[in-house]
Amino acid sequence: MIITKKLLLAIMLVESNLNPNAIGDEGKAYGILQIHLPYLQDANELSIRGGGKYYTHDDMFNQLYAINVFFLYMERYATEERLGRKPTQEDIARIHNGGLHGWRRKSTEKYWEKVQVELAILN
View 1 (cartoon, rainbow, N blue to C red):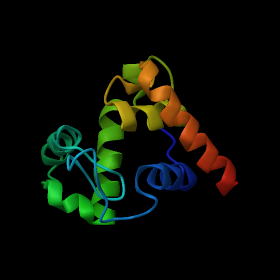
View 2 (view 1 turned 180 degrees about the vertical axis):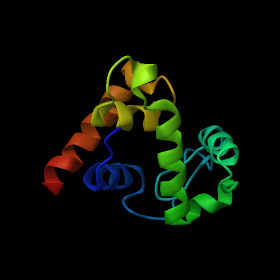
View 3 (view 1 turned 30 degrees about the vertical axis):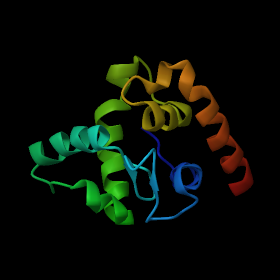
View 4 (view 1 turned 90 degrees about the vertical axis):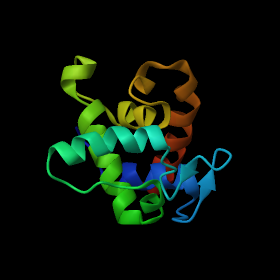
């Protein structure tokens, strides 16, 4: 799995315009990466199994914790074993936006387009 700093930054720009205190989706998404509770719960399962921290939804206002949760989620779902090939940046962005099957959901295509615009600006 290749998550570059630019990809992570582009996702954060799309999600919150780099606002760690952002609240979206009618109060359901928190922080710089706009993490929803089910996403957090999936990441926590992996973290706890590995002896790591249990994160609360309020922890997602902490940029470092939100990034850790993002990486845990991707470690769980953006894998070659799940996708049948090496995950791309597009896969990672669309999984972040649309959940574990987000990489193949039509509804995440526009989100990927937004991330691509930010990536182009960052280059």
